[in-house]
Amino acid sequence: KDLMELKNHGFEINSELTNLKFSSGDLHNDKCTVMLQFSNSKKIYYKPRNLAPELLIQELITSKFEVIVGRTILKRVRTLNKGEYGYSEHVENDGCQNLAEVKDYYFNIGCLSAFCYLLGIQDIICDNVIAHKSRVALIDLECVLAPHREPNDNIVLHKKSYADLFFSTSL
Image 1: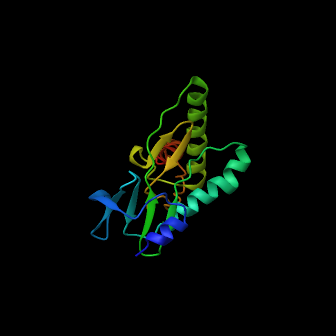
Image 2 (image 1 turned 90 degrees about the vertical axis):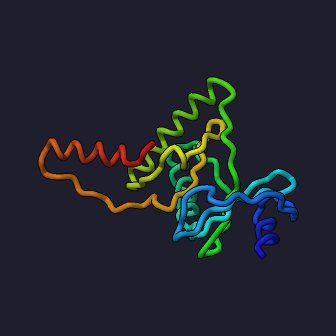
C-alpha cells in the first residue's frame, strides 16, 4: 500500500518483491522488523514502530552538529515515517578505501561520541552503527534518548558517574 510513496520518497525499489525476511532485528510491541527485497536487489526494512527518533537524531546531527564541527560525519539513512510504522533503507557496511578515510572515520566516530554524550544519547551499540566509508550510519534509534542522571556529591562517585554517562553512549 505504501509502494508509490516509498518511490516518491527516493527509495530505489521496483514493484516486484522477491524476498521477505521476518525478525530482521528487534521486536517492537511483539511485532518484528521485516526485510523486503525487490527484484532490483534493493532492500528496505519495515519497522512496526514510529521512526521519529531516527529522523530527529539525523536532523540534529546534519543541521546543527555537522555545522558546528565543520564536516559531514553522518551517512543519512533514507527513512519514511508513517506514525505507527515506517521504512528504512538498507545500508551496507562499506569500508574505507585509504588511510585518509580511516582517519576521517575515527574522527567522525569521536564527533558522534561527543554528540551522544552531550545529549545523553544511549543504546548506540555496534548493531546500530554502520561504517560507510569515512561516515557513520545510525539505525534502530528507538532507545536513544534517556533521562539525564545527576552526578553524586561524593567525588569518587562523581567521577564514576561522568565516566558511566560517557560510556553509556556505547560508542
